[in-house]
Amino acid sequence: MFSHDQSPDPSWVSSGPPPGRGIYCNRTLNLRSIKVIGYDMDYTLVHYRVNVWERRAYDYLQQRLQDRGWPVGELAFDHDLVVRGLVMDIERGNLLKVNRFGYVKQGFHGTARIDVDTLRRTYARTVIDLGDPRYSFLNTLFSLSEGCMYSQLVDLLDAGKIPTIQAPPQAAEAHAGYRELYRAVRANIDAAHTEGQLKAEIVAAPERYVDLDEDTVLAVLDQYHAGKRLLLITNSEIDYTAAMMSFTFDRFLPGDMTWRDLFELSVCGARKPGFFESKAPLLEVVDVERGLLKPVIGPLRAHGLYFGGNAAAVELHLGLSGDEILYLGDHVYGDVHVSKSLLRWRTGLILRELEDEIAAAEGMHDLHLGLAAMMAEKERLEWRFSQIRLAIQRKKVAYAEPAPEGIEALAQQMSRLRTELVALDERIAPVAGAAGRAVNERWGLLMRAGNDKSQLARQVERYADIYTSRVSNFLFATPFAYLRSPRGSLPHDPLPVVTPPKLP
Image (cartoon, rainbow, N blue to C red; front, side):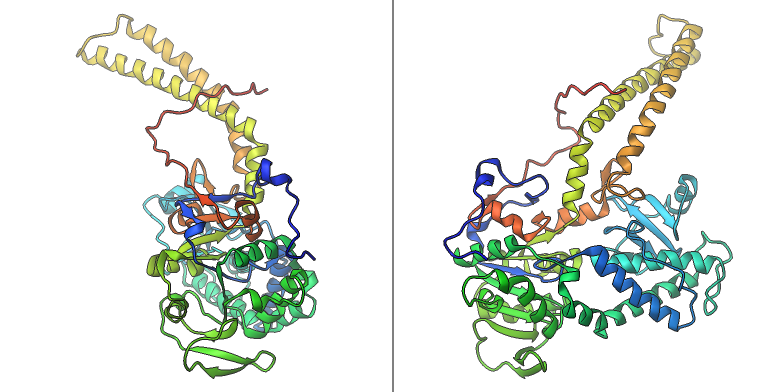
């Protein structure tokens, strides 16, 4: 435990944050001008061991489906099968990696990869619209067990092994059965959460599920003593919130201070994103253990614990609104999209996978430089190939200034260039393949879809003013930082001159 006069190891002051622990800025944010900082709890202030939590959620989902008579007893949770940011096409039973423009770049039908020709044939004229109920966006770590089970059930349905749902005539075709699978998975995973058995297990043995982080508490304390007014706004239930916050915060706080003392308001059962747009009543929690509530009459109580409510009531209490409030959470839609779009709050996304993403990119730095060099060479050869092809065309049709070489000599040059391009492609393919499998063998990098940004990256870029891997990264920024976004790059900007390493 630290006290008020203790400080973290100052070695980072000169060296900056460790790799992957920065705060990355899409829109310039002056923390000095922020009066209020609000936090989500799950996967924001409290970080779970993802594989342990999601495996247990999967177990509950599996049991519920087994109780329906579905043959799922032999299935097992596969943490590599699904990553955050994928899109489920619930009409076709496909999992898709989509780029920022909504075009499909990779796909699996069930657990089987969709080949390039089939993918192109299926989605060539389709732009994925996340507002279409046909698609479900897996934008939180809580989605992993759901996505894994759905993919596995698609395989069982295609094999005709789910007795209550008719198997589709062909696995790749749109079929109502895939939608029924999604509804069953969605309803049962929700029930597994709301019935409380899973969370009761976590409360009984939190050390099994939770990664304690003393630095998160210190970062929030820094903000508190810097005069920031702190909020906790979570969808979790009252008793669960109290148990998790006590377990993760109280042990690291000085003296007899508790987590309740840090937060000016704590709101449980917020039902985000509805919290940001509804007028639901705010109820005060009278008894945490019994969940007793009473209507709010008059002003809100400092350091009070509340249930439900709405953002307008919170803004009224604070006497503040808009860009004086910063809210951080892990859910792209529920935490940052709606609060940004409707309330104009400043927003931050917690993206824990970012640390692995950045480590993988740094580990492949030389490989990417080599790949860039080979692609530059390919562009040069293709440009020359196209020029010669055009020269042949002009000679044959006899227009414009003809090239001095004859058609046969030009054709020989084209043949040599074609041979060089084929050889170069053979060198590029394994390098590009290795880059595309970084972090996850199936899906590659979270924020990339091929050479482009992924749909998840686009959502982060559009709705999160800042993003970072964990709350404790604010230790490196301090509550007084001026976070500046980098100069936006454009396709016509001059490229930096880089001398790539030699590849074998």
